[in-house]
Length: 165
Image (tube, rainbow, N blue to C red):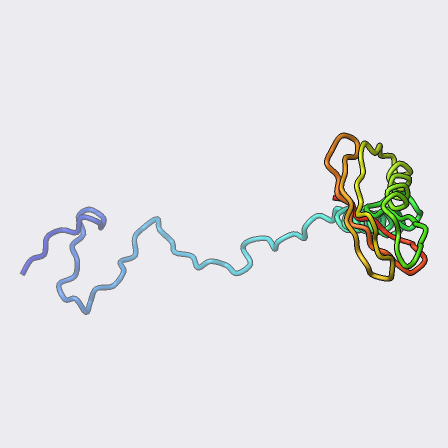
């Protein structure tokens, strides 16, 4: 039994006849050397650039904290300083646990003008009962726009707050 020549082997060499006898054939000029451990140099440590990133994080955190404190001061301290806010205050003369429309209109006009508005027209009920938590609604025109004010009396002496709509 004859085998064809090995197309991958060196020319002129035939494979052995018995498969058990197949073994690598040493070839001239080729010397197998096992890889040596540690042939590659160890990894060098990363270059140390300092603490720039940590300093940047601390500075940005401090700026964010200052921003939050400034917003809190704006929203909490601003209305406490007595500046104009969303709610107007005033006082009306009380007669028989009520206020007449003329007195209430005059007090509302004063409160609106003190806030920087210009009252064109203002209409309130003929008589409004005055007491803690009692409410009346006035309508009119302020600065050329329709205006509605909800008047809430704070006590029996005629102090009130007005929410504008």
